[in-house]
Image (cartoon, rainbow, N blue to C red; front, side, top):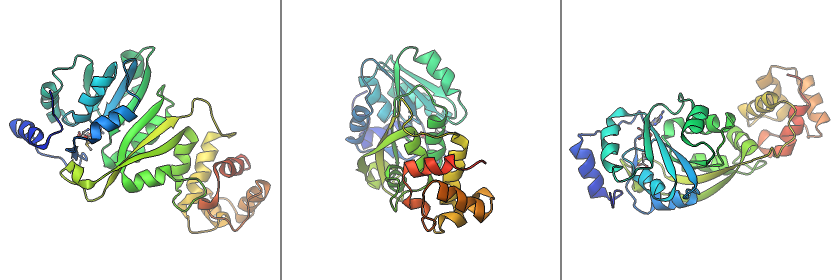
Amino acid sequence: MEQLSNISNIKNILGKHGFTFSKALGQNFLINPSVCPRMAAESGAEKNIGVIEIGPGIGVLTCELARLAHKVVAIELDKRLLPVLDETLKDFDNVKVINADVLKVDLQRLIAEEFSNMEVVVCANLPYYITSPVIMRLLEERLPISSLTVMVQKEAAQRICARAGSRQAGAVTIAVRYYCEPKLLFDVSAGSFMPAPKVDSAVIKLDIHQTPTLQVDNEKNFFKVVKAAFGQRRKTLPNALSAGLSVSKAVANAALEQADIPLNYRAEQLTMEQFASLANCFEL
Ligand code: SAM
């Protein structure tokens, strides 16, 4: 189907199927025809590559991915969209739509069954109500995927792509950078969607490290320390860590001194390496 991301075609298809948008499912569909081809090209979708898409909606991005990739598996929670996708994707024989919740589906198994011996990338205009849980699930499970190219709210994109040790950094910055190298690709205005959300968006690409770049003794400790440090980000580290980790200030101070981190520092001032050495100094 040509010209799917053309507003009158989208309205026609939605009208024909009597579709109404669900705010709860984060349904803001792309209507700007230049965005999907660009996202698909940036995702690394190519003839020998498999793609997982999360939330295909009516299939605007799915079509572009299917044109480039060997195979696309699209996971859509809203079953009302299945007949719509049957129609919009009918010209492609390399797309499979799965009706499931991306947070519940067994992705390891899905990849093994659908993409054996194929490099896999993820590309999605994510439902914003679950942006962080989806990204963290895909990273924490250490799925055999090489990158995630995702549209998220602009503020989330800036936070995720911030440099550790900068004002914009948050716990998600450190968590994401532990697993991958994030890159802000391009901004997308609120008017590019129907219905238009209240905020602008951006497309980011997360290239997953194939080998770890940080020396962390205990991953759980590392993430606990990051969460605690940013839990009270305005406080200095001794206070934030003792509150967040339920340890005495003396224990927090001793770990900071051992890691050679000044006691008047705040979480946003620490580099990735400093977070790693600090976590390595805690027995939690
Ligand atoms: N890709 C389409 C586009 O760009 O126009 C739609 C993107 S829309 C922001 C998010 C999509 O994710 C919707 O189709 C929504 O129904 C779907 N969705 C919401 N929650 C989901 C979940 N937990 N698992 C899978 N899909 C979900």
